[in-house]
Length: 270
Length: 270
Image 1 (cartoon, rainbow over the protein chains, first blue to last red):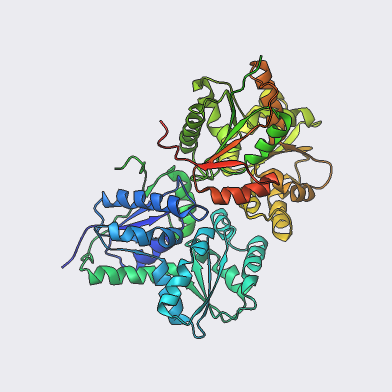
Image 2: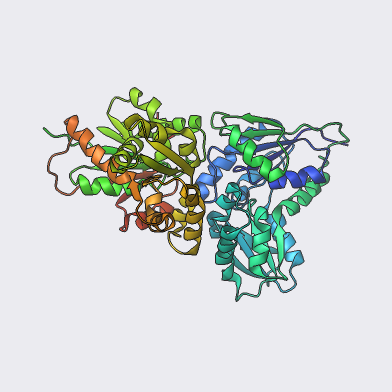
């Protein structure tokens, strides 16, 4: 049994391409529709109410394109919007938060786990809750690190500025003896190098993109939704703002140029 | 003759409060309606088409509240949207760009003028065009400095990180012998200290907020729109996302707490 309908992948902007890449590698037969809400990015500084409204509009857009399952690649949307949205959807859905939390719990020896993310993600407390749902004895230390997002978009992922910003945010963990840190925003894996350096040795970094790709495979398998062997798979990228900047910054994220790219208006898509 | 209708002031978010403060000081009798489009901020990374659509929606919202004139406090909206929007409006309008350009031209001795702003403002070339419209022989050097915006919002306006970012952007002017620099984004005046330090001595900084307040007074005077002597003037702040963050960051901008603050949905305001 196989299902040739596409998999929907949604992010507030460009950061979700790290999740796209991980899924593309793990599931080469799946066709992916990626939607980046670049006209309203970022979500991480906005309220639960606004993020939920935007996420619902994005999900609706992809549903109209007959996706078989939805992956929310944005940590902020996963934390703030997915819990209330998922039960409304006629298809299975997952975010990056639960897979990231599960992986952190599996990797940590001491149960002392750090989380970094956007202001909204950290304020929601969703990672701490998810981690303690799996390992009730875990101690979770959360630090908002909003400047990592513009640093990654500017391409300043190494060098003095990135190192100094990393040091400034991550010094909050100095006395906490964590052994695992969740990179709770899709942009952060691009700064892995300076983050690891600022933390010092011996701390495991959890990249939710990789964990979400694994979980996506499990979800499709469980529901009998995996695609069969395909020839060339053509992905489709939708953005809500001009596609030029997305193409430029996106190729920095993917390390290769994007395929089919189209600007769309999702607010009118009812 | 006096006109007691309010003055409309619009910004993509919170940065326009620097303009609000300058107008409030210069025109104490005017009642101001401030609209911050915080649900879609920032504009500086978005396309002309999207910025124009958002600006039009914001102007329409304020027009429905019977403003007598419109001040566009956002440099990106002033650069990308105002030229096409102003002729459509039934009231006088001005942006921060022309006043800033005029002041730079007046202050510069050598005619060698630097401009910093968001990616979209700089790419538009609008400052260079406005400056050369006034001083055709001027030489204009423009450098996008996008990270200054999140730095200001994070409150990191001094210290190592801010200094290093300033140094990195502004070293582009090292060999250019400018004598005047336009701070072409409403957030930048908050970073005046580190910007001046990175440039070294003897370079004049142009804060468009101050220039726009002067120009607002001239516009109201010219059109017979100044308000008469008033008692207590109550301003009104509208935001499109949750007002809590605006109240917090806004008080950092104004150095005092905000007055009446209300969240509104402007996309439905037709």
